[in-house]
Image (cartoon, rainbow, N blue to C red):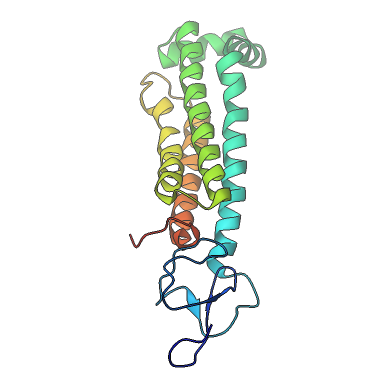
Amino acid sequence: MDDDDGTHIFCSNCGKELSKYYKYCPECGIRIVYDTNIHDFRPLFHTSSEIRLNWVTVLLGIYGVFSILLSVPELFFSDNVADVIKFLAGQERWDEIIKTLGITRLDFVLSLQNVGACHLITGVFSLMSMYLCLHRSHFVWAFSFALASSFTILIGPLFVPRLENAIIMFISVAQFLIGVAISVILYTSRDQFSDYELL
């Protein structure tokens, strides 16, 4: 559309020609911020912000599914996991591990279940964030769920004081760092959400 001075402006998300009076793009619904997401020409390719959000959506899905898959054996087969560890380590080594950690077999099983519950909650939060990213709506909720999924993963190992399993701590810390990185990338792509406000 021609503005008063005869120039054309276009949405950077979908390329629709806009009037300077629009607050939202009528085509894709993105909020128009005139100093950041309009162009004097029609974009011929996806913006870097849109590409980042697409990647974040995929990563949130992978992160969520991975967390849920980790939670299944920890929650529902923790007894069997303890038996497998006992079998692989041998009875003498198992007794030594239990004595060193100062826990009983039941404590070990309960610790696995706590970590599994945290993995399950992390996965659900991550998939909820992914769903909102797919629909490009409710940025604050999408970001909150992504960030919550990062921090929830640390609850299991941190609040089970007698669980000193280095592998579980390593997986939890690695997932936490990956989750925070995904949340930061999601925040940088916030202008792609239809309800985006300057934050």
